[in-house]
Length: 310
Ligand code: ING
Image (cartoon, rainbow, N blue to C red; front, side, top):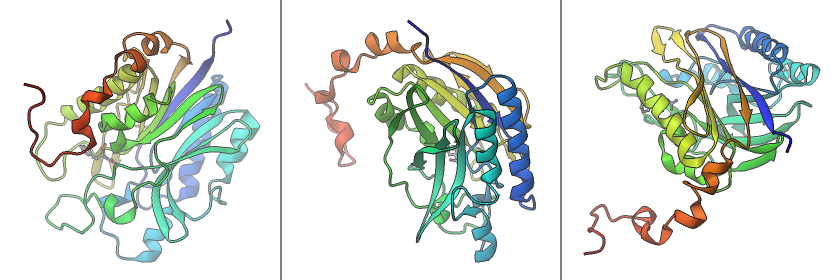
């Protein structure tokens, strides 16, 4: 049986500053794409909101500046070099960006195949943070102000020779998000993230950020028998430190590749898309072992939960 192997590059990116131009950042990304193609990668995964700084950290009242962080078309003149390079080098890519769709705005990710065609789109569903400016915070987290909740569900696509899905950043912390993909037989989940190293409104030891990042990626992979690629935008962005710890995780939950810097860095693994088959057929054989009739509490709770059974 020919093995279905996708060689995947996680393209961790170092800081993107508020003053950086999209053109300069896209040039960094094109360079990473060329490096990945040179190392025989089939796919490169860029972070969430890859082309701009993580602008939800600010309360931005100037509409023109706020609009400058979004893409009104995809591709656009500024993103076209990514599509052209993908086609030229024969490499697919995952791109996180801020999307304008008519009156609506989403935190979005797309998958583009080796011919430069957009084959998948996902809009972030779990938006953390708050919707109004909270001046006493060290920094804001205004994703609920700048984006609507995604309206495309959690799809899995048959593309690039396998079953691929996407999540964005905070989604990875919600096991239901991974499980909805797992129930569709997902084999590879692509996740970009922008995670501040410090908690902006309550003390949390910084090492826990890395622990929780890897915990969520590894659990999601193992409990659904799929590969997971988690890719950060990292380093100091205008004084706020963003964690790195980008990782490629096997369907067994083991770390196959891990970033060691807070800069532009490729992490690469040969992802055998059949590596999770025995997990899906045995320990996480949902048809054989999952007992949805006992999961009523997930459907809805009244806030007070009565003990089940005796
Ligand atoms: N960032 C963070 C994330 O989920 C966060 C926000 C960090 C929420 C830590 C809770 C705990 O990784 C984004 N952009 O979702």
